[in-house]
Structure formats: C-alpha cells, structure tokens
Amino acid sequence: MRLHRNLVFAVIDALQMIFNDGEYADKVIEKVLRYDKRWGARDRAFIAETTYDIVRWKRLYTEIAEAHEPYTRPHLFRLFGVWCVLRGIKLPDWKQLEGTPERRIKGRFDELSKIRKFRESIPDWLDELGEKSLGTELWTKEIAALNQQADVILRTNTLKIAKPQLKLFLAKEDIETEFLEGYPDALRLKERKNVFTTEAFKDGLFEVQDASSQLVAPYLEVEPGQRVIDACAGAGGKTLHLASMMQNKGQLIALDIYESKLKKLKVRARRNGVHNVETRVIDSNKVIKKLHNSADRLLLDAPCSGLGVIRRNPDSKWKLEPEFVDRIMGVQQEILQNYSKMVKKGGQMVYATCSILPQENTEQVQKYLASENGKEFELVRENNVYASKNGFDGFYMALMKRKA
Image (cartoon, rainbow, N blue to C red; front, side, top):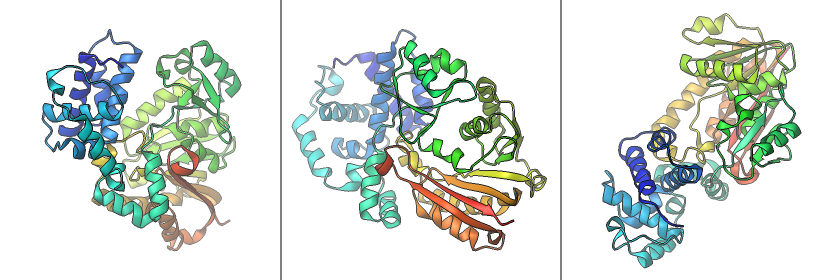
C-alpha cells in the first residue's frame, strides 16, 4: 500500500478532533471527508477505516508509542506509525515518521498482547466491570468479538420489495450481498460500500440495521391492526421495522424525549412508504398518562451503556464512564415502571437494550417484575445476544405479558 500525504494528514486531523477535542468519531469522519471533493471511494475508505482502527486500538497504540494526552501532532504521527508497522505497511520517507522503531513496536505489541486490557484496548474500570458481570471466559471472548469491525447489514423494507428482488436490484448497482440464515429480512454486504447513494436506498427499499437489532421488532409479536407504541423510538430504526411487520395497518405511535430524533424518523418514514406512524414528543408525564392501558404492544428500547455496539462506535470505549452506567440503570428502571402502564390487559411489551451487562438486562427485568407495578406482568422469554456467539452486535430482549 502506498501512503498519500493528504489522506494521512486527514487521518491525523480526525484523530486530533476525536482524542483532544472530544468530538464523536462518526461526526468527525463526515467532516473530514468533505475536505476534498476529488477523493474517490478508496481514498474515503482509507481515511474512515484507518481513523476508526486507531480509535479502536487507542490504548494499545498509545502504550506502544508512549504517547499521552493531550496528544500533540508528533504523538498522533507516532500512533499512525504504530498502525503502519503492525499492518506491515512500508513507512514512507517523511520527516513526521523518521526514526519509527519498527522492531521495538513489534516487541512491545507481543508483550502487551498478553494482558487483556491492553490487547483489547479498554480502560481498567471497563475490563473489571466486564469480568465481574460476565465472568472471565465470556468477557474475554465477548470483548474480543466487540473489537472486530462490524459488517454492513441491510434490512429489506418488505412494504416495498421482497428480499430476493432487493438482492438483484442492488447487484445492478454493483453492490453484492448475501442472505443471512435466521434473519428473514437481512442482507449482508460482501464488500464495504456506501449504500446511501444507491437508487435502492433513495427509493426506501432498505435501511441499514445490524442483524441483532433486527431481532427486536419480531420479538414483540405485532400484528396488523394493533395499537403499537415504540416508547424510546429515537430516529426510528425499529419503528420502521414494526411498521413493515404491521403491513402499514393499525396505529403505531413513536414516542421520544428528543424532538430532533422524531423529525429524522418522519423523513425516514416517508422514504420507506410508512403511513401508520404518529410521532409524539414526551415533554411531560401527560403524554404517557393519556396512553395508559391502551397499547396491544409496547417496545421499550431503553437507553443503555451501548456496550453491545462498540464495534460500530469504538470511541464510546473512551467516552463511557462508570458513573454513566450507574445513572442509566436508574433511568431504565424508571422507564419500566412508568411506561409499562401503557400496556392494556393481555397486551405484551418488550424491554430491550444494546448492552451485554446483566445488571442492565435480566436484573432490571427481575427487579421490575418483583415491584408493585411489575406484579401485573409475567416474563414470557428473554434472549441474551452475544457478539462472540452470533458474530453481530450484543443485544438483550425480554418479552413480558400483562395478565388479563
């Protein structure tokens, strides 16, 4: 691989914004990719993937490079040098990379790879929490799986097209995909490409959604004609999946505390040809009270630590703090206690997170079921989805039914 100065400098700029300015990696990469309109798909892929790679292995690389916060540009070039050496990329004759100690880098890598927190590049507190929560064997496998680059998975919008037809449609746009066994609407890209510029995307024939995330909506067992509430809808990935399963029939109410996210959902719903969705901002308790005892089905895709999705958000390893995990557990229980009142007798709800921690998952459900409000519900089934077992994101879902 021949390294181009302008692309490498763009990576260094991106790292500066992520590591020193605390900006989110996905937003930074969007910004940096606008630097030069002449960059082709390969150039853009190099910038995005190299940046994400160095962010993913930040702790390991900084230990090897002996670079510490706040990172100067020479520090960032040292990290880039480590990345090159460990990938067997010939270092160019640039002054920024002069004197890169290749043999020492390889030696330090071998040495540090024996220690999990360095090998998997995670903070001490997170390594301790993971081991305590999941046990040594499962945590070791899980954090290794969560450090792999995530596949690009599409969910067929069955309101507009069948999966085999979508596969053919995408092939005409030079995007090769494959079916995934056990995921009825999913297509996996054989090679990473920008799918958002395709006609198929503009026509609303698919959404990008991880395979594990695609398990949540079916877990709720919705049917056309029901009143379904998605109470933590966000930008609506699962809402749109529910709409397609309801065949656009019935009422689908999407709630969220952030109006900006619901606006994005409206745009996506139009593109998807979804017209049974109504959005409501949770700006007071009245919004929830008005819906008490009215839902056939309720989805609680609760805010969480996001530990199950760090493959696609590697910078969250550094942004996440132990205090946040403690705080969000309080929010999760509050959501279960208050929002569950919207389910009518005989109705069902799913509590889901994109976390792998039992204290955010099974333990929250057990605590809720043991409470006064929870006594009206019974657990039907639950599913712990681990990246190390299925190859996709880590998720949790529990189906509960309100006694008739």
